[in-house]
Image (cartoon, rainbow, N blue to C red; front, side):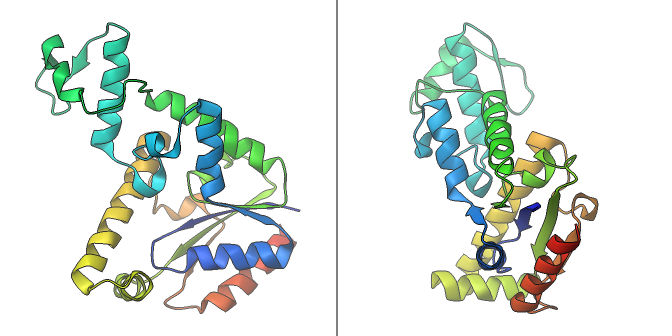
Length: 222
């Protein structure tokens, strides 16, 4: 049966939908297991990968990691704001970062390997982390995006994480930015481009239970 990738906005019930789809199909839903497998293959712990993961992607953190890797190899580091190379002595600004740093391409290669290995198991639902990009050429994979109106997402995050509105808005903004930057930086793609997906479902317009039913029907017809 087809594999399923699900891209979702925070607060749009995407994780709930993914888990229920997997349950109905007898599939395994992969989310945090993906980062666990990446960490294992790279010989890192999950905390070292935090800046690189879609859920917490941090462009500045990635820059520092790559700068350290370049310094370790005797290379030159260019200023992130385009004002020329940093002096070697400036490496002291990286002193709080781990010395076993790695580069974006290393993470990308292992991420791609892990997603492809998971997809080979066929009966899987893959949550986020560029699954729709890595598997875009596979005809046996259904790509779904789950979205919702911004106000509904904020209300959902407020309730789920017990936050006030201002804090919930911060979370939504931060998560959206991290995910969009991750997809752009790693795959040169627009996270919101509808052409990446077979289906885009808005849970502000369609109840999550109905979305689950629609995905299940699509899996049968793919």
